[in-house]
Length: 403
Image (cartoon, rainbow, N blue to C red; front, side, top):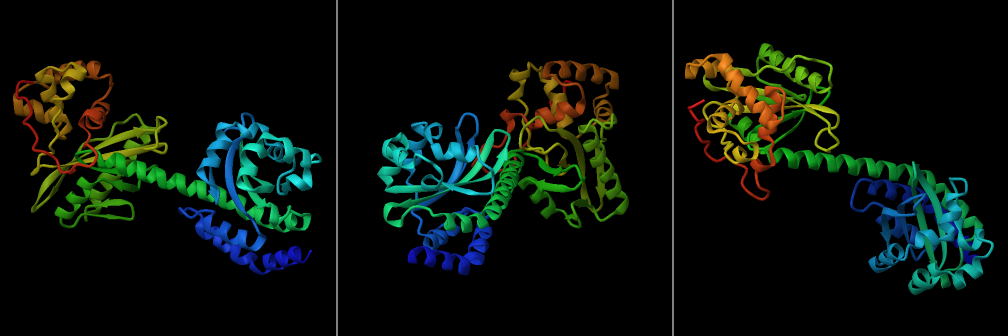
């Protein structure tokens, strides 16, 4: 009993530090680790973990173990021990917000410890005597739980200990939810940054709030070379309120089109900034198709500096889509930001002739609009920057003059 009194006294004294240490690890690689090390010292624990499992199938989605060898994690999964874990079953059928242990809550605890496969293949080889478990979250059939282990010399979990440990459960519940959310956000951020970095042209990504959230290395280089252009409060600030409004409206139009709220396609803007060379902005609506690159809807804005050819060779796409040389030439020009009117005048062709040719390209590529065509070509896997290579563009081939 002296050991019990000492543990409870230490827990009361260090409870605030334990909670602080737990929250300090949320969203970091040390999640649960430093907290668990201190808790183990205070409450005489051998090991512990936070896990996520399916209520119906008992499959394990993942977890955060402390002082558990990977071999025994593999044994638990390979032996399908979740289906045979009596404490896990008891916790799933009991009210949340409490800790339950084998010796305190399983009526046949001694027989279970002596005969069960869980103890024979998993607990005994690790020197584990008693186990305590508390439910942390439910998400459909998926549940999160915290598990604590004790060796034989540390004794069983007693009711007064389980009662004080239950004071930690609200924090563990909240921390687990926060950690998952932060990791999801960080993973999505990394996913978007990696995706944009694979695009050769300078590109900016605007979210549903019409604010710029990401830019790729080519866009950073463009901004460094331009005087007076910056990203300010999520805006592409050209230093001219009227020009800023033009850009802002096209971003809004692209996002609204992606959301299905506008039928008007965004325009291509040519920005004049003497004495700097002009550049062109092309606005592409992005719809969420279940990937992690777009949350729901967004606008991808490509920047084409007229004094620096973009360096986009579409020739790898010719055999993929069955394009003729003339059709590739038209695609080359369109992804450079040129309009049909400009091309008609430059090549002495009627706009209707170019529209007819463009409709043939639409059928081959499987798109319905010029915007969809450009984004399909620009983001095709055959044209992405290989991982681990310099993201600076290669010199662009001249568009085929025969279209």
